Image (cartoon, rainbow, N blue to C red; front, side):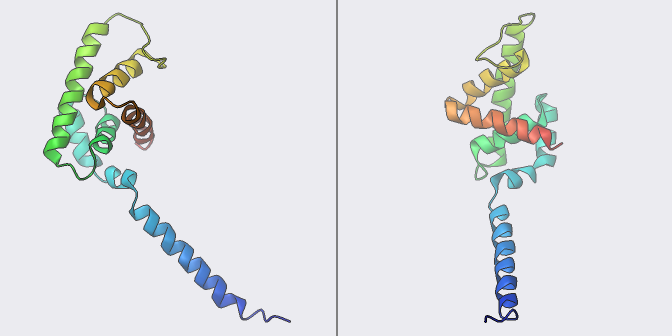
Length: 135
C-alpha cells in the first residue's frame, strides 16, 4: 500500500514548479511590459491628441526594441493621419470596413495607413481595445 507521506513532497514540488512557470511566462508578456510604459504613453497621447490605448497599441506595433524616438514618430504619423481622416469625414456617417462606429472606422483606416499589413492592423485594434479596458 503506498504511503501518503511520500506524496506530499511531490505535490509541493509540482505546485512550486507551476508557480515558477506562471511567473516566468508573465515576465515574457509583451502586453504587460508595454503596460509599464503607460505614464510615457499618457504624455505622448496628450501631445498627439489621441487616446492612451492607441499609443500603447502603436508601441506594440513597432515593438519594444524600438526607441522612444521611433515610438514618438509613429504616434505623430498615426495622429496626423487620423486627424486628416476625421477632417475628411466630418458630418459623414459612412462606416468603413464594417466597423461599429465612424470613430472606429477612422482609427482602423489610420492604422492601416501606418501599418500597411492587415494582420498588424487587426492586432492593433484588438490591443487598443484591451489597453482601453485596463484604465
